Amino acid sequence: MSDPRPGGLPDASAGTTVLVPASAGGLVERTVCANGVRVVTEAVPTMRSAAVGIWLAVGARDEQPRLNGAAHFLEHLLFKGTGRRSALDISATLEAVGGELNAFTSRENTAYYARVIDADLPLAVDVLSDMLTGSVIRPEDVESERQVILEEIAMHDDEPGDVANEGLFSALFGHDHLGRPVIGTRQTLTEMTRQDVHQFYRERYRPERTVVAVAGNVTHAAVLAAVQESLGGAGWDAAMAPDPLRSPTAVPAAAAQTVVVERPTEQAHLAMGVPTFDRRDRRRHALAVLVTAVGGGMSSRLFQRVREERGLVYAISSYVSHHAGAGLLGTYAGTSAGRLPEVIEVITAECADIRAGGLSSEEIERARGQLRGSLVLGSEDSGSRMNRLGASELGYGEYLSLSEHVQRITAVTDDEVHTLAAELLAQPWTLSVVGPVTAAQLGSAA
Image 1 (cartoon, rainbow, N blue to C red):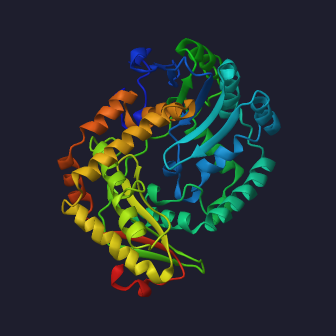
Image 2: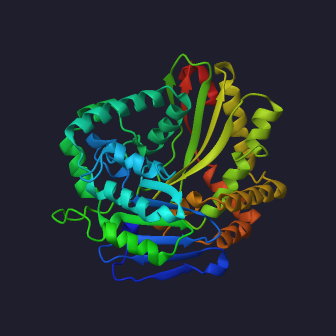
Image 3: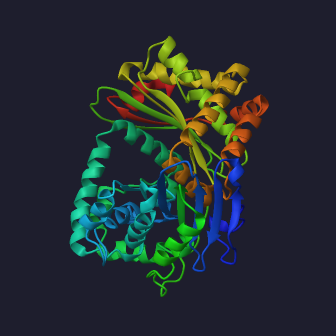
């Protein structure tokens, strides 16, 4: 599914192609409709369910600074009613058949998705398509949902771990689109008008940015027929020219910095990280092995050294956030304020050892095995398979079968992990701390 075009936009002249044969565990097919909408399906006849997601290459990084939060605001508003259905109708229609309906917004994508029994897939496609193209965005709904999101921001602000991780993104990427909060701020949400959101809707929700991903007991032909009926002649705003493609973020130059938000919390919450490479970089599989070995589970290096051996934290974990042009390798930990300098020192010392080649072959093999197992276990659910389809089509420009994905993880060598660790962990750390501490109290640890 390689796509050399910037932004991952489809070639409208392409037909239906088989990406993965049925013999590989699930037939995966892809069609580009005449209007540019992409349809990707994975047929798993042994399931009785079907998961459908309408994914759009629209996220927080596509917003102007004054419209920070518009993509997330719009996600909320599309549940408030269309020309055919009220807000109650949207939820009741699927709940009446036992279905589940939800959505999410990220820095680069927005997805509306449902999971139903296989016979009700056409209904789910119709409801989601109606939401996507028929939303009326009434002024009164804008005002009521504005208050809901302000409450969501308040809830987010009450989670110091979330604030610390958001602060890490902001510190690393600054005023770049990746550095802004997905949910927006109180100021941008308060000042955003109905016209602002509706204009964003008309400009950004375009067929060429849209992917319909379906997995479960389905056939590609049946899904394609349902999509063509609901989205083929949909009310896309033809008067609006396609918006410019987003430009990838360059990997920022790492610089040691510490951002502290003083709060009277019981714990100090720490997020520390370094920038990484573009999400399509071939080294991403080696990076997955590295981050799993560093802090991906109870047997990982940081969990063992910081929690099990020293008892300094309850929670500690590492993660990678992939994006177009750049990414982030981060570690989160929560501890008492007095122990925070020691926690930082232990983490940095362990990472220095890992950078110098300190990960053993046993640790690396355990990480490979953990990743392989989690991939296989995740494939047992139609929703997980649908998510892989959508994320692969929009984010990675290729679709790997489960066996291919496992093979790429298995093929990662110890030397590749050591080389990557030496490169990434040699960068200065950026720290984001939330809790009853000051930068001065962190001393040399920061």
